[in-house]
Image 1 (tube, rainbow, N blue to C red):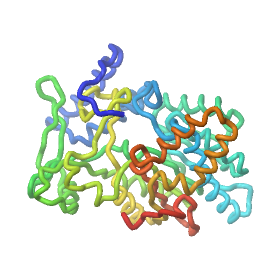
Image 2 (cartoon, rainbow, N blue to C red):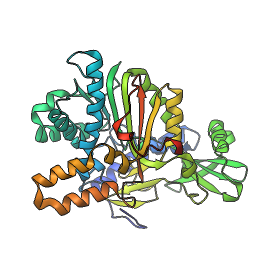
Image 3 (cartoon, helix red, strand yellow):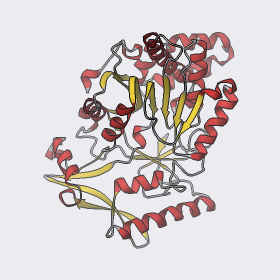
Image 4 (spheres, rainbow, N blue to C red):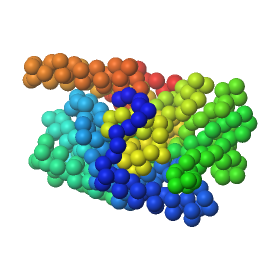
Amino acid sequence: MKHVQSLPEPSADALEHSEKLVANIKNAIESNGGSISFKRYMEMALYEPCLGYYVAGTHKIGEQGDFTTAPQISPLFSQCIANQCAEVLKSIYTKKASKVGGCIFEFGAGTGIMAAEILLELEKQNSLPETYFILDLSPELQQRQKQTIESKAPHLLTKVTWLTTLPKHFSGIVLANEVLDAMPVDVFTQHGDIVYEHHVIWQDDALLEQLRPATETNPALHDRVLRLNIPKEATPYTSEINSHITHWLKSIAEIIEEGLVLLIDYGYPRKEYYLAERNKGTLICHYQHLVNEAPLLNVGLQDITANVDFTAVAEAADSSKLEVAGFTSQACFLANTGLEEYFKHALENNLDDQYTLAQQVRTLTLPAEMGERFKCIGLTKNYPHQLCGFKDFDQRYRL
């Protein structure tokens, strides 16, 4: 993707849809004394019932959407994830000495392509889960997921169960690929000793950002920003904090009895996230495979994301009594989970696709592509075994 200054004009139907969402946001602003936090705005823009970006009936992922994820790029990615899942499922199976080897629970399954590929690979390894749960807030994506699995693995559709809330308890693997980056974030600007919280207001018939002292609007955010110890000479400094991670991981820790939480996303350890030169923050938007930095435009029609602070993930895991069992780059994780072997096998069966397969591997692993920018972190509960995905190049020391 590339950063652009101007974007394609939305269709008339899309503009009408966006205007309905803007009207809801305007009402929220007026009922809240004239402003809402950016976090609340982002929540509405992405998740407002029937209107938000992720819950409205439009294509988001793939060529017809706004961005592409690793499972869309190559089945090799999902096969590697399946290999890690198989290791955990087999361990649970052995421990329980039963035919039930645990479950897989995927957050935000996108088009369903990763679920289908994982199930097919686990079938080959005789390691199918008892159930493959999918939790997705978008009815449109749920339907696409069903269609994808029916198309690629129809005989395994009975293994899949769609949920709208977390199960009460389960053992196995929680998967979240590019989920954390879509959580609403607090946006702040520190100027010297003063921390400002970004708010959204309605003025001159338009949505505008406004800076308000965090000591008045969000004292907890003020304190968290000061603990980042951003050098005063680097200010004004704008960035983000994801305050949802702790509650989200705690809710997962409460339901998982034994197993692995595998999170894959783009981001940095905290020391790299809040570098002085990254003083504009990481918040970006995706619209028709173009990147922009205008989150108040095309409301409800474009994705809004922020990079993940993986140190915050590790801290949230510790407070939720989850063990940080591994942290590494996507390239290293895929290498550990058999990418080279899966690539060779794919070549044997598709020799004419050698160039395409090689390009897929490059995209997934090269530092300039997804290899270093995306990270994998493994969190475990009551699972004392080494995870194959982190057997080499474990970088927990960076957290």
